[in-house]
Image (cartoon, rainbow, N blue to C red; front, side, top):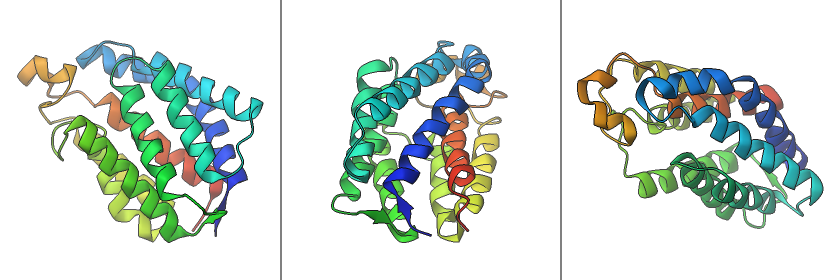
Length: 201
């Protein structure tokens, strides 16, 4: 089914709640291999997105995604703000002029967002980053968001035995092995929340 502007706003509303509920979980994962701030960063960023979108309702899908991007870049520290901000910025550009997103449109927007993350963060599959959840999700997305969620979860769990090659976790070398990547976890939650909010086939 097509995704409307209202659906996108509902997704951001849901994400604010999801990242609040998972704040401690994401922080614990980040404490093991990072700065222990991923949970608070995601909670703060998406709460600010929810506030902005409800206060200044965007005109269309592109505007909603663009606004979310700008808020995340402005309010979230560390790598999360620029990376998630870039994701939504590129996705917004892919949605220009569209009143609703057909499944293929959403896949195209998601693909554009991931390409933005890769260009900004220079991460490749196997580096133990959010890309390890997002690329499998993208590959599975033509089969629906539930399939994409399952693929993202598998990709997230696959980061546990990896040695980090990007970001703060890479400083730990072999000690990063055995820990689930927090960025892959928040990315899985991003996809999972879309599936749960929209319940598209």
